[in-house]
Image (tube, rainbow, N blue to C red; front, side, top):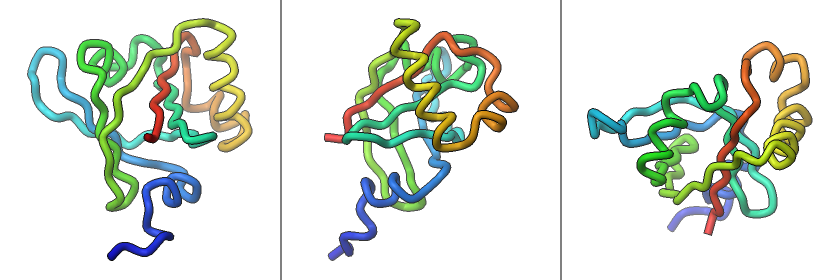
Length: 120
């Protein structure tokens, strides 16, 4: 029986990076990427580093299923794109408060979309 501390929610609250796996929109293959994330109020927020030009984002637009691996605690999510500018800004602010505005500015080049996935 897994300890409470090994639950996905617990790991999401402690870690800075997870691995997501999406289905390639043309290849149909599983494609994995390490990503930063914010987990807040039972929701997983993802911010594609190149915004709507990010390949994994384009893949989830075609197939909204996303597999998350937080160092061994795994789950599948159905994701919803966020394209409303105000809501995207809200996600960007969450990322800035978790990772620091400097690092977000350094690694992220376009802030036009985000992803949200309920953890339940």
